[in-house]
Amino acid sequence: NLSLKVLSFFFAVSLWLFVNLKATSETTLQVPVRWENVPEFLEITNAVTDSIPVLVSGPRRILSNLDPRKAAVVLDLSDAKVGLSNYQVNEKMIPLPPGLRAQVLPPGNIQFKFDLLVEKDLEVEAQFAGEPPEGYGVEKVEIQPARIRVVGAQSEVQALSGLQTEPIDLTGRDSNFEVRRRVDLNRPHVRIKGGMDQVDVKVRIQEKTLQKVFQATPVEVVGVDKERVELSPLVVDIVLEGPAGLVRSASANDVAVVVRVPAGATGLHLLRVSARVGVEGVRAECRPDRVAVRVLPPQASQ
Image 1: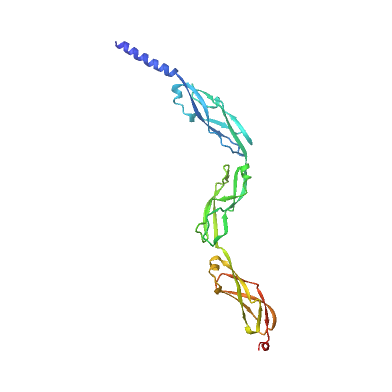
Image 2: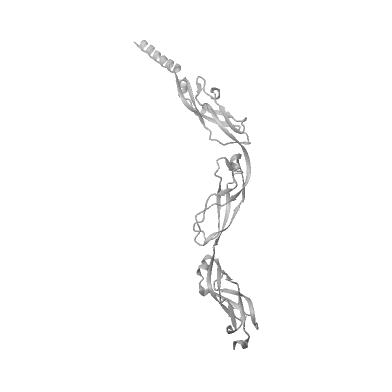
């Protein structure tokens, strides 16, 4: 019977619509939490949860199409003060489509920790890693800009006495060089004011200074016949100082000590001795730097 079949079809459709339109369901959603209007003089210093659990119930057809991102809770922090503050979330704060109901599940509050926002000028120091070749070292470091202003939570800014660059590798460096490095703040709630977080670093590399001692070096007399001279002491030590490579290469054959006796001098004199070094760029010092010289008259030596 065609009429009966048509009637049965419409009855089934009506029943399906009635069941689905009237059927209710519920589900737990993680509703996003956002905040706004943080006072300019405050900084949030704790890890704040970015969602809360909410039990949502209502018609299944509406609930199944619900996008949690469109139900986000927005907190107004314009009344915030220094210290801990709890902001309670209630059902009225959750924007849901008509027909849906929300129940905020425990704990139902968002905790914020606020600190004063302060500024401070800090000196930047270069941080090094690795070692230059043997005999070389860092002589001077120039940083531009030498000081940087930071802004952030008072508790963290006050704890800073200075700033460091990211590590600068010295491995294999035996000459001057320049690099650009980021400033390593290492503080979660401190930032550089103005956003310029890089500095230019000039590093001057110099060969290290080394000392080497040649002991008991004989004193040579010049300016008078050696047969007429008595010395005390007869030997002195020579201390060489200069670039490590040059000093290491010097040998006893490269050094000599002389004392110059003025022409016509006789009697006892305390004269300065001088060192001769056959290596350029090396300084020499005699210890002691004076010797007693007795010059005998010409007839006394015959």
